[in-house]
Image 1 (cartoon, helix red, strand yellow):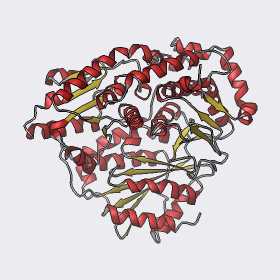
Image 2 (cartoon, helix red, strand yellow):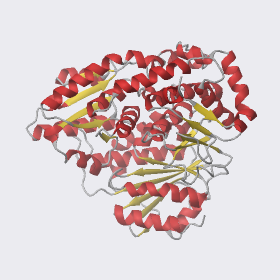
Image 3 (tube, helix red, strand yellow):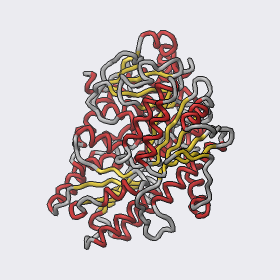
Image 4 (cartoon, one colour):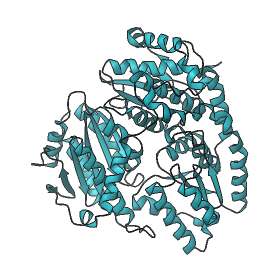
Length: 540
């Protein structure tokens, strides 16, 4: 079967000869690929068996999701007949990353709200509500960010004289609080996803297909691509691309390369590293081990071709300079390929790839702060102030001198082969220039550097930060918002929620003994410019 249909993966001969080939042989002998396809829950050990037994339906979604095709198309035509063609998705993590990649790849317009930044949510509200349908997507049915978005949009629809219930489509698991709410409130449609698929493996469930299909993406083609790939990915032979990819990751990890640098090399897929980032980090980053995905802008980005001994460069698309691994194939095939490979890597790393034991800690800390308003309002004193930048630091992080001095001292806290995580609790659209910090910092610190928009990354790499290799340092960037948004029937605003999420996560990281430096921008534009200048003063 042609590589473009199956999602083949190629691995450098050097890496295979060193470590991956014996692992592949063992995987083939143990029939791991066919057992995954048959949903054998015993593959990850007795401690993982219960969780795995209710998390393996992703292997057959290319068949079981077929009925959604007609249902989504019918709803799309019905909405368009009413003049509703603007799709806004409220969802986090697995509920937002896959549909964002699908629609971006196909050029289908979808507005994704996976933020608590009031400015970004206000921009979504400022669009034409008369043409808007809101897809509220949450597996648990209780995701605080998504529930806040729903409440804000219900109020906005109602104030505009629009029947809110007719403009809300729900995607959730059967029996969730959101499913019950959707029925009680009479929301337009409630799609129930397969409950035996975890969020990060849910690209080809209702969570991925409903918002993407409503936006105009060809979801039938995605399932066709996955179906073609499934025939190869479930085979027990050394040419199986999933076995090769998972074994390559594990072999590199055994040699000290616990980071995986992801870049598109001309695949025709838009944003795939961001989806793969959650899949890999949340699946493998636990029990003090795992693979840290580092999503970069391209194969020429700092940290890719010069990845170093602690990282493996992976190209999505044709092989490129510096890449030790390259994967090919259309999007539906790639989804399934990487899911198989991640499950295989989990077995080789001896962890459960289907749980996320450390995600709840940051959520609990944020809730505690929301319950204690004094901790959020005037309860903080910066260690230093430099223009529009207030400096807050965990114990042991020096805050003396200029902002550049503070950064130099902070970067020096990283252990050998550690990593730097930049966490921007800002507006992903209006403050997009913050993402330019990643390549600058990677170049100047020599560290593998990740960049995440908060709280989006909390549903992604957040698990690895607490459960994976404990060699990271964490640079948080927060900022005052020009305006704030009340969350109806809740005792907090979006701005306070965003602030609590940043402080809560920082608190948990500090409790894990990790250095945390938070730069708070009292003026976002001026503060970001200051931070950029300070970074540029740090010698490479």
